[in-house]
Length: 212
Image 1 (cartoon, helix red, strand yellow):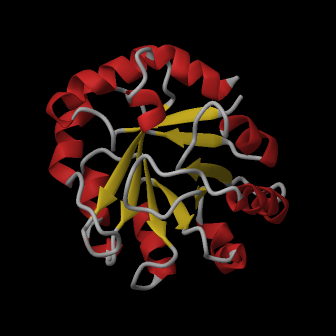
Image 2 (cartoon, one colour; image 1 turned 120 degrees about the horizontal axis):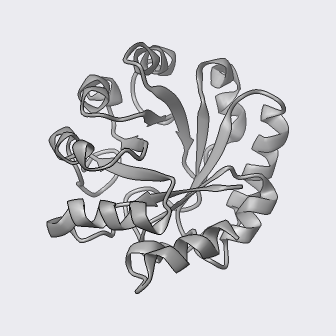
Image 3 (tube, helix red, strand yellow; image 1 turned 30 degrees about the horizontal axis):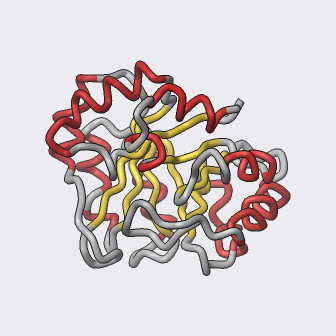
């Protein structure tokens, strides 16, 4: 069954601890952290100290998505804060292979993310180094955007490209009860959802709809 990674981007920032506990009770499989620097994307979000402070409140895996221009500077701090999986963007500055190696060296699983207009062939050299590909179905930086349908072809093409390699496919952006079935059918293993869950009156029902 597909897993759900609940994003905190649209959660109540004054009650993050309670939000995470509620998401865990509702059946979220992972907690997804959207980390933004105001440069790679035009927005700011959580820092490593927030992740570290929340870490003792849940045993759910922390899926940390670094939307940063220079992720190498921050890999250590987010790994030490308690991240289980750290995803960087293939469009980021720096040596991608070195960054993926550093993530693994710090004891985390490694992910590589693609913006909507980035060709999937760019990940081919890095497939042996990663555990997950994160397909952005919106332009990264803001929650609540509409799902871009071309992401479905990208997911399906990635599924063929990955074959039997132990690499999961995650999709982020505009995931809701309407788009989730198409993502699952295309081959997604993990659905990242923010506002659809945290703006719902019933987190449990929202997560169940994504899975079923």
